Amino acid sequence: MTAATDPVKLMKQQVGKAAADLVKSGSIVGLGTGSTTAYAIQYIGERLKSGELKDIVGVPTSFQAEVLAKEYGIPLTTLDAINHIDIAIDGADEVDPQKNLIKGGGAAHTREKVVDYLADQFIVVVDAGKLVDRLGSVFAVPVEVIPMAVTPVMRAVTQLGGKPELRMGVKKAGPVITDQGNMVIDVKFDSIDDPVNLEKTLNNIPGVLENGIFVNCADLVLIGEVKDGQPVV
Ligand code: 5RP
Image (cartoon, rainbow, N blue to C red; front, side):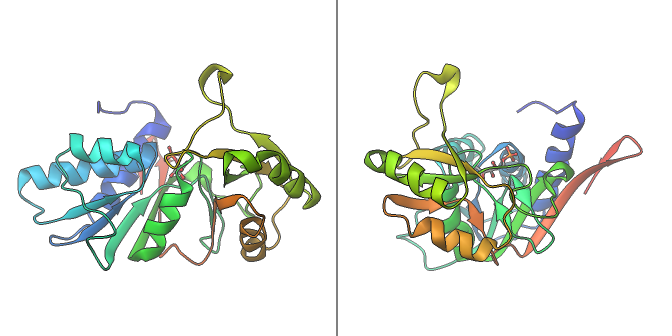
């Protein structure tokens, strides 16, 4: 990965590095998905390579995280082989003042939720543009759905007041397919007043595997900002 030059990338790089610095030797580390976490994975790999960090093992939240971890020399394990995760580092698409999140911009929220909730310490890494007063202000809620249930789930979320859109891939050649072989419906709500209940309500629709609302889960949010032309955390 080359050094970033644009301000948002610089913020992501700084915040990814700050999170990587929180990882201690001997830890089991949840490795999140996305462009910000990618920097954390890179810096964890660099700390391992330099010998500053020893005996860590990663649990990837996606195929993307797995590929990156291998590229940067981070040994990997699975949830079958461990009984806890010490620290997880992951990005987010929106963060509210209570540290509730919307995730799933990379269609990885199902595995991310499993890993992030299992961690003793869950660190969220975002640039300042992700902060909102209320969830749903900008981002739609990603909902992973088994393919045969896409139409009834779209109907059900419309009845809840959402505007659903099936997520399409590059050049709209076909729907985005998750690591689990499912599809993602992005559901835009005008305002999410009660994220705790909406998370449960969406997951109760038959055919829904998981949605991207994460409540009462994040321990620390590291925010990248640009001050006086310099990226700071
Ligand atoms: C993937 C995610 C990402 O963490 C989220 O989309 C943030 O990504 P980025 O750091 O690239 O802005 O939830 O499913």
